[in-house]
Amino acid sequence: MEREDLLLIPGPTMIPPEVRAALAAPPIGHRSPQFADMIAEITKGLKKVFQTEGDAFVLTSSGTGGMEASLVNTLSPGDKVLVATTGVFGDRWVQMSEAFGLEVEKVRFEPGQAADPEKVESILKKSPGTKAVLLTQNETSTGITNPIQALAEVARRHGAAVIVDATSGLAAIDLKTDAWGLDVVVGGSQKAFMLPPGLAFLSVSERAWEMHRSAKLPRFYWDFSKMKASLEKGQTPFTPNVCLFSGLRASLRRILEEGLENVFRRHAKVAALARKRVKALGLELFADEAHASNTVTALKAPAGVDVSEMNRFIQDRYGILLAGGQGDLKGKIFRIAHLGCISERDIFAVSEALENYLAGNRG
View (cartoon, rainbow, N blue to C red):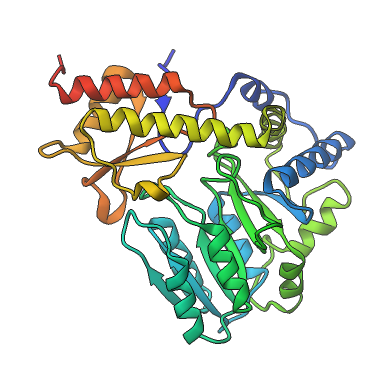
């Protein structure tokens, strides 16, 4: 039997026992009354997690599929969008928008720094007619959380819709879809929802529906209208991953039983412990601590340490999987994720493993 590693990476995350059991249940027909009951419960639960009274949909796709769906359902070729990017996943908004022929304005912030609402506003003032502002709630590549509420206020002042990639923050970090005026929010299964990869979640506001009615970007599989019409019949427009839906129902039950506010507090507490423990080892945070993520801690590579070799050693010796840097940060940082069902005990385990490695105890 293979050893099960402790996954302290920003996805996939650890899967709790009751969710595993649900994933292992026999599949059911996706046009059956049983599935209709399941998707009704899931939709109700997702709305609570999104903190919305609007529509919520589940797609059988990765979070990137949800990002694409948010664009093709609300925009038309040549529409102007502003992307506030703070890392790899902000850059994905740029790449995707350019691929669809949108007019893309980019505002880049230094890696490890959060997006500055004042700077975003200064650009919007010079770019009348911006149709949407594309944001990343939680940038796992650099370990920061962006001030979504303040950024959304700026966008709304200038008449722009707000589309948020919340894949690595939803159900871990507070995000008030309706209260903050967010038009489309994207989530993913393999993060704080404690599931394998393969599902994306979307919330859709009334304003997004208005945009949808005139949007001209091509869509078929991702069509919000198909999703809504199918959901009214207790179905999805195309064949869903019914086993993941079963796991999602179990995950939502766990999250809502704990209570959203308690889930947010737990993530904040575990993140604070992680930052405290690594700083005690003499490690330096990469992210601005004022905006440090509660789901992943990014750290500068210690002088003389090969991050890839260190991560391999810690996985082989201690069964703990850490993440390295992405893109330009490869070899310069490493990351400890703490989202989903990660506990304080897990943080003590990884900090002890790091302490032993840095002290040269590698025998």
